[in-house]
Length: 289
Image (cartoon, rainbow, N blue to C red; front, side):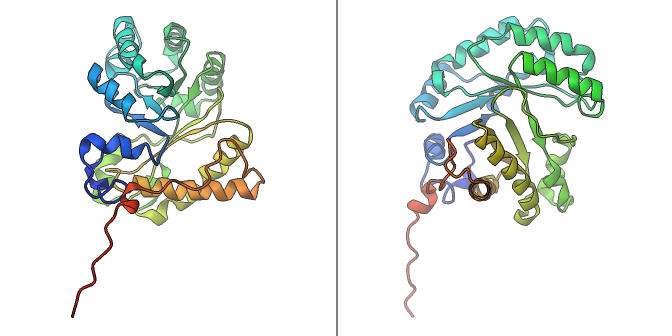
């Protein structure tokens, strides 16, 4: 997401209005997970505004509609799929990998359907599939089969890591509200195409996330050193602390790149741009006694 009113005065400038959230977000981060398209298509006017508010280097990673992935399960969804891509096409070069998030009910027996669907989507875009059926993780033969399929179709396999969220206080109200929505799946860092895609879900308590963030910073440093451009999306329940977690990850990644001698990797994280909330925060007034 890019629009959280609780980020005003923190990530965003103190007087930032909702209509400017994306513009300010894109001065700090160069990609975003577009979750809204999972529920409904944006209007043409909205898509045009997204293009106007972001630089050419920015990348949106939109989810395919749930009508395609969940209601139809990728079957006979040509019309809905075409409408989805037609609506977002004006974003042009700003379109990053599209995420195909499949429900836990989508099992190994439906791999031929996944293969057929990946062959049907526009070839000019990149794709990443999120699998939630346990057989894709616990069965060696099934894991190998789906990874080979994705590699042939040059499609990434989404890595969804919720371990940090579950490593802290599970009675935290935000965690309790989100836990049943986030899958608890085995994690294997894997690249099936070229640019890995990670969805990291942390805990509201910052220190709980440090081992997990460090783990992925090490893998991301290796990927960058190999010439890849990983897409890293940082979440936490209610996402209040997500920008701060991303800044921590960014610093860790820079450290890891320097440690392995790839500090000149392209793209290198370097120093994170200043947050609008830091730049435009008014200095505190001294209270006269």
